Amino acid sequence: MLVFYWIGLVALFSAVAYPLSIMLRYLPRASGALAEMPWLPDELHEGIEEFAAESEPQPEEVTLVTEDKLRLGATYFPTPRSKRKGVIIFCHELRGSRWSAIPYVRELRRWGFDVLTFDFRNHGNSDRLSSYEPLPWATSCELFDLRAAIDYCCTHRGAEGQLGLFGLSRGATSALCAAADDRRVMAVVADSFVPTERVQDYMVRRFMNIYVPRIPETSKLATVCLPIFVKWVRLAIQWRQKRLLARPEQAVRRLRQPVLLIHGMRDAYVPFELVRAVYQLMPLSTRLWLVPKAKHNANVVVGGEAYQRRVVRFFDRYLPPEDCSSKKEGRRTRHFRPRRRFLQRRRPSSLIAS
Image (cartoon, rainbow, N blue to C red; front, side, top):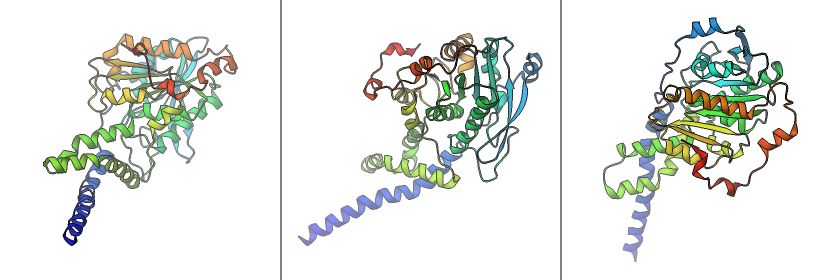
């Protein structure tokens, strides 16, 4: 009996000590890699001067003030049309700037939408925090910045009930999280959306075998412990950065606004299977367009005219014109009616745009 007791004790110690040793070895490397992971830089800044010069009426330089008293550089582009259809806030990607909006908003302005584009903190002309290093993941800082832009449009531009968000990559994640808790937003377009928790889980699973001995038994044990490792990696990132990460997978469950998700099928950073899984959690009014042969942040190039046409048609459908009352309860109720969760689990394939 004493022998079996010691054998059981050793087995129990091994079962606890091995995962703990893996965590201690892997956690610092994983949290550092995911917090400083290189992301695609913005390469669509061509034509800034030409766009500003040909813009009629001329764009207005404005300053946004966040809840934590930071000043953000922004530009407001009025539509050349006499009647405004709505106001779109563009949220740029990591390492981008407000000028990243140019390829995305040309047609929107021509079709009657005003556009506000701004620099997130530590980008472009906005204030910088020495204690904050921008991450590939949306944090509470980006939500503060976007909320300042929403407040400005509703307070100074009368956009409440006419407001849409257009986000790219990390900006798309911020847009969805902000819209989930702000009913002033009527519609969202999310291009190359990054579902934070699922992408982090995918990265940990993909690269875990680098740090785990290639022995079948130990590899299986590490796989069983992966959910715990992923949670600790997220906590380590937040502790290192002193910022809370946004949780888009939970936020999309609270959405009531119509959403257009655009994603490239050759996106190596965010596989489209991850976005499709999050899509199943979203309201039934959500549309998913998978763009063939498009990589991360390249949908606007590959999609071409079809991309512009879909975005314009989406906002034109869900944002009421200026002369229509944005306060009419009939239209708002249709967008924000509660939905039962069991209806969101099954979707007909026809809802996925080809």
